[in-house]
Amino acid sequence: MSRSLRHGAFAATAIAFSIAALSACAAGDNAQTLEVRPDNAATSVGFIKIQNVNVITQPVRETKGPAVVAATLFNNGTKAETLDAITLAGTSASVRLHAAKGSGPVVVPAGGRVVLGGQGNAAAVIENGSEDIQNGNVQNLVFKLSKSGDITLGASVVPSGSHFKGFGPSSLPELPKTTPSSSSSASPSGSGAASGAPADSSDAPSDPASSSDTTTPTDAASGSMPPSN
Image (tube, rainbow, N blue to C red; front, side, top):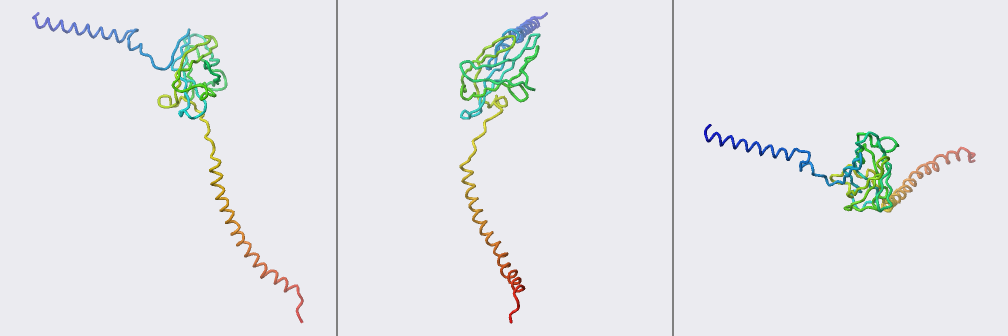
């Protein structure tokens, strides 16, 4: 084999080893790309894994209303569990749990998952959320499960906009009714209608009254009075 062919073979072998080494680093179980974690809170206790946890408030900070807890609960066990409650540590806020269908408990099926938040999913509504939590803070949540017990983790408090649109509170508070403006706008129109009504009514009765005075009474009177001598 010539010297040029030997150099080419060595170069090809070196490139092959380099590619193999890079592939091993990128595709292994402990690859650095697999160690990237999202910003959303996540934890795992026993067979239960909780991911993508956030507390989502109203889209506008000045708006008062409920907030919600958004999360995904995985059950890697062989028995179903129920999510009995969620509490917000350090606050008096109460969280109402709603199943995706019906009025039963929120169940985390064996080998499955349950999603909190979003259309068609289960819901965890913080009734007085705007009073007890603030956007930008990290709120400690306690998930109480029937078999795994209490699982605590901190979740970011974010408004329901941008990436969280569609997962925030669905029942926005009603805007206050503009009673003064409606009454003030109604009163002039009412007075105008009232001033116009008498004018029409005065005109309308005048014709029947004049006709009844000029025709009916005179005919009746002339018919009832005896002829003059």
